[in-house]
Amino acid sequence: MKVLQIVETAYRATAEEQDDTVLWFSQVLRGAGAELAILLQGSAVSYAVAAQEAGGLAFGAWRQTQPPNVAAAIAALLGGGVPIYAIEEDLAERGIREEACVTGIKRLPRAQCGELFDRFDRVWHW
Image (tube, rainbow, N blue to C red; front, side, top):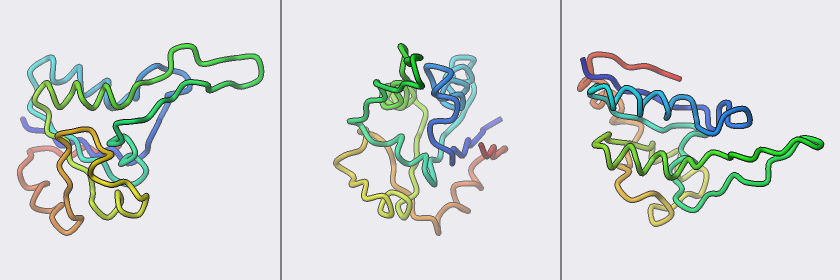
């Protein structure tokens, strides 16, 4: 079964955890042999940015000592053979240029999403 995971909400649970839950889940699925791809849209296109750093998060006296490294997780997924797409219009809306992105992310016009969906048995939206 081929699965496309659509990630729309960025930094979900990263205050509590050291990883984005969907990216972590994708790594687990890929490690178990699943055929999958990821589509970043909405605020989650910020995951494509290579030079991001999430340290320094604090609430009162509590400090996040194990901040997520989303760019490294994206690079690891790409290195493991997981295709990652990002919606061009969402990148442009946020001023994210191609040269700022992790190498290997494929830009996809929103109008081509239907064609991408057709390549998969399941489409999961997070």
